[in-house]
Image 1 (cartoon, rainbow, N blue to C red):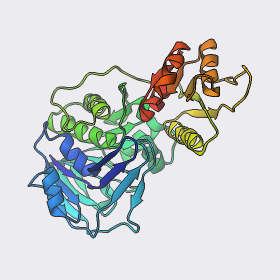
Image 2: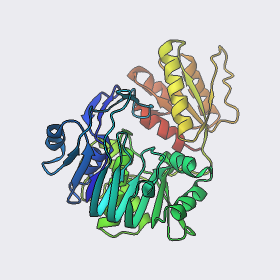
Image 3: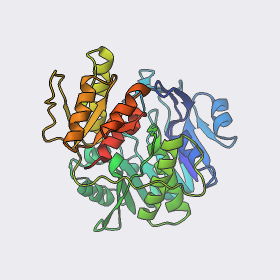
Length: 373
């Protein structure tokens, strides 16, 4: 399997992580135990790439390394330097190729079987002269909607399937799993996400695309079956951050959403900048995942406003604060509550009132998406 994609420096503040990955590098490492892999990538230092990803890596030169910096795994990254380095397009040919969209340039692919993950690149597979006898496209719901101009994810999938002459299209939708279509698009299959206790989201899409490519292009699985296996491998990665992926599929419970995305009320103690930042980060992340959100205003009485709310997301810091009062109100109203807690002192009180306590910020937001009465 040839993996053609970018290699970037990645830094995350919480949890504290610094690594050399990017889509290409992470995908190549992800399937190292599953497939014979050669990485093609853009990077200024050949030695760094070969030290991290093997002596047979093919490195196409750029002027500078690109860095992605995250506050947390669901945050929008800061990308540097600016302007971004540029490189000449590179040609890749082989029987099985995974192509990722890159910041510096693009790969022109000639393949028997190709999997394309645009990574936010507005250009699709065929637009740069790439070709494949068999093509699968893996992208997220936002990319699919942007590329087709429709908010109907299933219709967007069908339009991409037809317009790109693809054998299969997979549209990922975070906590709701993914939709998989093939052939004429008349049958679309839902593939679930899987629940984990912790959730390191950076690079999860890279792992999905890489393992899907292995199961579809190398093992010959039907697209929906390949996507189901890829979803399980992603669960293993986000739970442990361990790569390469294991040959034996991990086991995790299905975490499919039921019905429409929830309306989530958000409450946190204190009026500090840190508290407001946390509320804004939670709001932005939940909306990106598809939820409607409302912020519970602070008060000094028992009437916590939780009307027309499906889930409460609370971040209490004291046992007698406003967030704990909201947790009590949710318990009385039988509204599911996810409590993001970093202080052990308030954990027992939150659990006493029926909250599900989650200590990982990213995992707590996904738990709010999956919570139901």
